[in-house]
Amino acid sequence: MIEYFTIAIVLIVISLLVSMFRILREYERGVIFLLGRFQKVKGPGLIIVIPFIQQMVRTDLRTIVLDVPSQDVISRDNVSVKVNAVLYFRVMDPQNAVINVENFYAATSQLAQTTLRSVLGKHELDDMLASRDQLNEDIQEILDAQTDAWGIKVANVEIKHVDLDESMIRVIARQAEAERTRRAKIIHAEGEQQASERLLEAARTLSKRSEALQLRYLQTLTDIANDKTNTIVFPVDLLRDLKKTVAGMETPEPDDGGEEPAHSSSEFPDTSAVLGGEESGKA
Image (tube, rainbow, N blue to C red; front, top):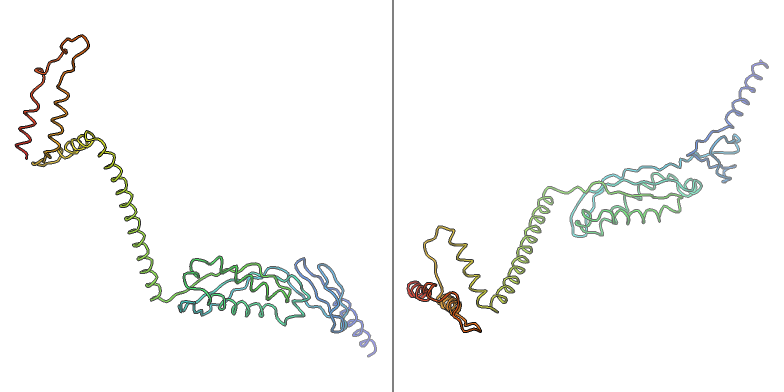
């Protein structure tokens, strides 16, 4: 009987000695309590914990990925949406994470849900869809400030999905179509304005010289002559000015020696009569 008792005592002592040795990985820390009072933070590696006198709470220092469930959010413009997000955080101070909060994982999850609803409720739907980066930064700053007392660092917050009703999706599609139509009309109006300004500059340039206007009209006649048209209208003023120009070209100018020019006016056809006939016929 005594032998069995001795063997039991030896086994208990051996088990206690074995339980004194703990191995913590590189990303783990042990918060040690001595008779219920905080003593120190140990790790990583091999540490000794005295049974019944010291207690150890193991804490993971790696980044934790928290999936925030979908939250019903009413935006500032009274649109009901469902938003979910993902949160990245890690324990920076194991002492505060164990002492200042009962369960830092659950506390951070609940805080992320309430903060998500609070922040997004202050913005309109367009901001949720177009300014996600700014909203992510706002939520991250609020969570990081509130979890600092727990020894937790919120590294990043990302909004994953913004779910809308089918009716709201159709409304947004009509709004986008109206916006594209508005931009097209603005671009068309700007093009018309620029074209009118160019035409006004061209008219001012042509009005300075009547010959330029005549050449421009003749060029236009050349362009329309290629079409299958039967009627061409000649303005009377244009024909009169053109006749004067041709008559001036036909008048010889005497040289210094008083000799007659090499070409006399008899060599040119009587364009005045021709133009006059065309003028009377067309007018």
